[in-house]
Image (cartoon, rainbow, N blue to C red):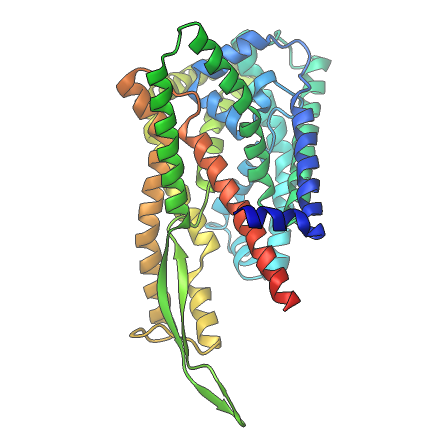
Length: 426
């Protein structure tokens, strides 16, 4: 490990990429520290602590909701836009063809549509969030024609687009996913304050050593489980027949096709949080348009989501469903089967073509079941422990899952670049 860290900083190209990413993340944190005017920060933090959904949204926004910054939505609208487009691929064949069959050019068009859709979604979500915060007396009341309202909406939309641009710049460095690293930076930036608060509470006798020991044991257990599942894979044997061309012999080797237990990473968690936030945002928008009906709908949604059991059940289901959805996006059995057939490879005991596709689909479905159950359980684990013990952990399972998964992904990409460099030098 120490040798690899030394290698990273010895290689100028990788060192430069890491410094660029660090600079972009620092710029993101600077944007997150600039609050919108007229915010009652004490009331805002009380709301984040008392409301499960807004606590998760704060994680999801990379900590930008802590002080209602100009980047308060962060990459949230873009992720919501991506979810909508992914669901629309099931309805519109042209979108499906663009995403799955047109290759890199089709993905680029798809992502461009997502960026266009981000702008109106960011405006709607900002209006809904500000309306909810007015009802909670976090910010002063406003009218639909108030200049300050529209300035705040335009500022928040611009902030989201800037953060999205920063994420794309991080993607270009090929050392991790830009959106995930933005969220990672927001979570990690809160660790020092968590530690400081815990030490202060310990000195005042508000927290006991045994509570801290239980939390550390819980955190280590979650970290171990996340690493174990994320690194776990099922290896399907693949054989390549021997071929003779002229005086040379090709093939005749055995290999394997790795299928990861958790191919979706942290994306289902992020998608689940994004979708959970939509009903409450829509309710607040309805209050502004039709106060009577909107208030009734919004209060019903809030009551339903405030119940830990119903909230946890929906959150688990969304994470479970999105794990399957995203796995179907990143792993296409038909395409893998075609690639194997083109290269002359086959799975022993399985005929090439459609039987191989069905076999891969069946294996992937079974493996993904465990990954989906694991992600869903980790997502609601803090709620379960709070219901059993009556105590809330400082850092939830979702935060640890995102931090560990993103760190593993970045470490794997750095490792692959180091191996590629060693191969080129040889």
